[in-house]
Image 1: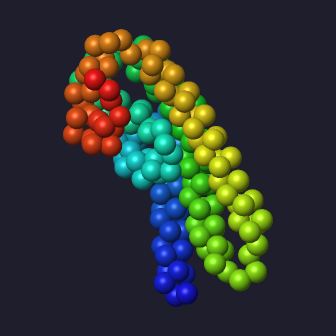
Image 2: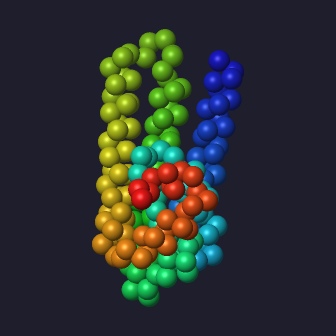
Amino acid sequence: MNAQKTIISISLTIICLIAKPVWAVHESGHDLSDEEWSAIKGKIELLDNLNYLPTLLPTIMRHRDVLELTDEQLAAFRNWRKQNYGNMVRVMSAIIEKRVEFKKVAFVPGTTDEALREMQNEILVLQKQLLDIKLECRKLVMDTFPKEQWENFEFAIADHPRLASLIRH
């Protein structure tokens, strides 16, 4: 039981360390600068493991020179980020919290099967919300990338096995 408490404590600490500073940066009332985005991209990647569809925008922005993004694309991506980033992090953080809570009560005597099903359903609703947010970003990328940028994107992510494995030749 002490090991379970330790894991839960560490998980909650990670959530607080990741989500709260990231949220504070977003809530500054203006778009994130490139430096701010660079500082939080690792945190997004940690939270990104909670959804099937990877978050593409950090990788795209990190490789914007190789991708030869136009000023219009950069503006569109920054605008999407400004409009959706805070909500995405909020949903990801809620998923983490619900998963930790689920694991915490899963083997507590008296926790009913129905209670666990309800908790799982809450997690699934949040995961759908996260997918919907990411699908909006995916649509923006799909609608704006010509063939050449897809080729450049494939080159740019070659050293990212998780993303590179998703590209079909």
